[in-house]
Image (cartoon, rainbow, N blue to C red; front, side):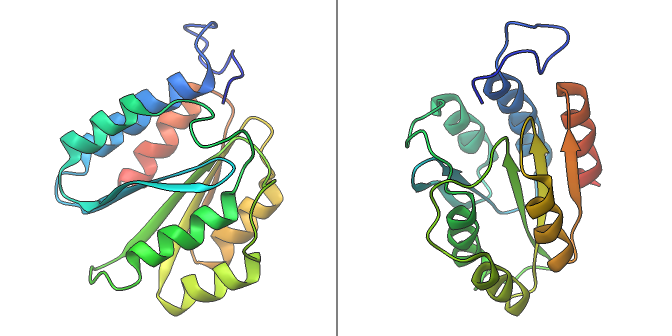
Length: 167
């Protein structure tokens, strides 16, 4: 997320800065949805439990920084944490949006376990890869959970992805 050049209008802005603006905008548009925020690095952090308080969640994003919970990537472990938050939540649909710019380098949970639990609880996992993400695994995760995988090469691409998910 430290890489620059993701935003053609501000080449000095790093990926995290570009992503955080789009995610905050998305959160504010989800007025009637219960949302949770899960952040991952070397480990996983639930930054916000399920809540309708999208204003507070937007503000939480402002307090997050690159490397806040380590420099590795526990992407798969973040999914099991997210599933645990959603698995008993009764809603028309439960989805996870996994946004990453790297390969998993820290998880201990096998991907097949995550996919089995997601399917059991009918949770779709939309994946968004930016930068050097492992699109093969992201495509697999989305396909196995009846969701969609996206690739965003720029801030404009990412904005379009979130717009599509919003519909």
